[in-house]
Length: 392
Image (cartoon, rainbow, N blue to C red; front, side, top):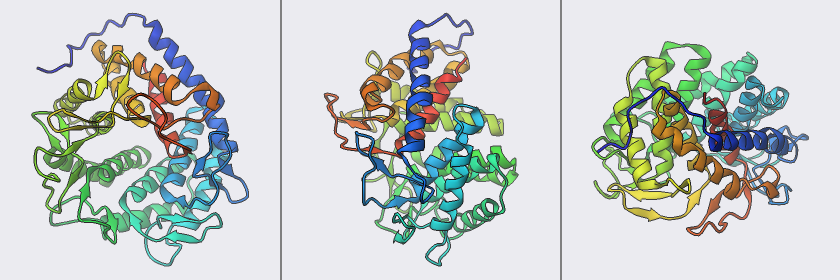
């Protein structure tokens, strides 16, 4: 039986939700964004740091990945556009440097995987996940400023994604060029879907929505088991579940993330996504969430069995986004789940003593696994907390 309760429009006051929203929003604007705009940014190279120590000092000697630069650029562009933080100049400076240092900087089409502090190529792989975030960042900075360099970067990125990455036989895209293994993954496709939705919002181009539709159809046809609501992670070349049907890994965080993205696609396309959204949220809540504690586990199986009791920060932010979207539609059952998740995020992961930083990963007993603060987490935290603040 579905867990989702009938939609109601009466919304009683929720002091716990209001308190969690205030705490998270204040932390984001007064601690996290200032930290990553200062100690998390290298002003001599106009590039974001990859990692910080818990003291706030940059971790030395770590290559700068295209994906991380893209995520940070997108965050500060979005913060500037929303008025949460004056990050426009920072985002544009970093974006201009990023395009020069990461796009075709080894003389070949596409974005290199990583560079050193001075812009020398460290890893020349072409990674679909990184290209998805390149498109996402371009969608956001193009709302700040129309620049020929960004237009050219968008065209070049679409060329390689539509060309070398695309698999016309089995559909979808290859994870990496050259391939690093024989697996195919849903995760980079999810972020490509997110990027095309953002580009459609920026450009209103029909071809962006058409790309979204192809990915939505792939997800519902291959990634999702509609009967159980299980979204499988890994596949073989023909999109058969790896290691075997019924034995696939499921990440509750991705169930929440896809549910939120499908609602955004529904808004863009006018195509009702209630059936897959309900199936995924019901499965995530039932098998992956301790509703009383607001705790989300890392991995479950296709039948809902627990596989990894550890807990990352980002699934909680994706739950905030998905549940806020449903709560905004009048669903009180989903609304009541939000406050415990927000409280846990701010007390276990984004502790006040870290002054804008976070413990990204904890074990089954909530003891820290992480030894540094990865910059990549800010993307999740920013958009999750933003969704919380925007909930009516």
